[in-house]
Image (cartoon, rainbow, N blue to C red; front, side, top):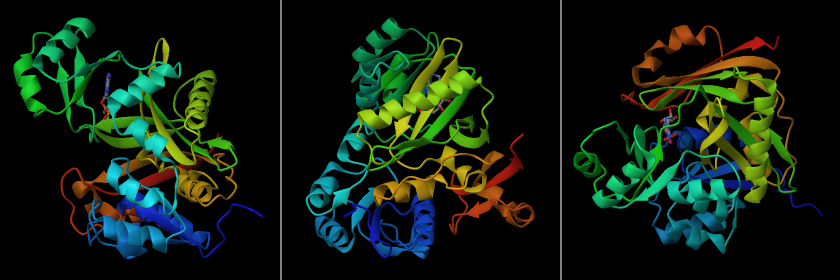
Length: 354
Ligand code: AMP
């Protein structure tokens, strides 16, 4: 007997954006089917998977979805607790709830990472102007105020410099419970995409070096320009996080590289934009690895055969699709409208490993 779901099984995915779409493509290669749950009738993954069109608090739709699939996974971390309550008794959910509980709230996340013995930016809980004044007095400036929940791509964040008027900074948060983080003087930003299987096996991809523009990931370069020992540290700490969460699936760990070593910025309990390079530079990419893990299959080899630079196509960047397609490594998400700041696709250029 094995716990692996056989080919023909159906993977349910909460969320049908580009990550869900690329998960469904990888699943199809393995003979597995996907069924997404997403309120948007135009969700990118809907073009290639079965689709339940419903909002995340439509309990009847969630129950029907859970009953139609063999396992449920997700492509974003802000899944309402009530949605999980509705499906958890009906179907396996991988990664499990613990990973969502830790990563949905920046305060819980930072506290959990620090308790694990990992280095994080100095932080303080902020729930009002008084709390903000106290936190700034404690941590100093520059600092970054972030909403505890629902922040992504730099949204819900305000940088605070010396002497900035704290009342207007707090107003900008619109009353959202927040966390103040001391500014980390980092040399580089890197990330590790790691996977853990049902049997506890761990496989991590090489760390990539990330460049952000306007709070959005612009590019990931592999290998990151860091010493080998630091790359090993990054991979080992990712393994510790995966084990501590008793995790099943792929997880992204974003790290700052400082003179004093690695500082964990955040974790994402899902496939990650900074892991897209694996599609073109590894035999088994992050999407297949995630599908393998949640389906209970053995993890694949995460080694890299090429160096890679992945660049996101944001908004109008995608207008160049024809010229970009000439060289290969082009991945488009099937989105009709190229709005500013919207991730429309990515392109990965690879070179043989030196
Ligand atoms: P986040 O949403 O937490 O990933 O933050 C988005 C980006 O803001 C990061 O990739 C960093 O470039 C920057 N950033 C976030 N937190 C800090 C921090 N504590 N110190 C310095 N830069 C930060």
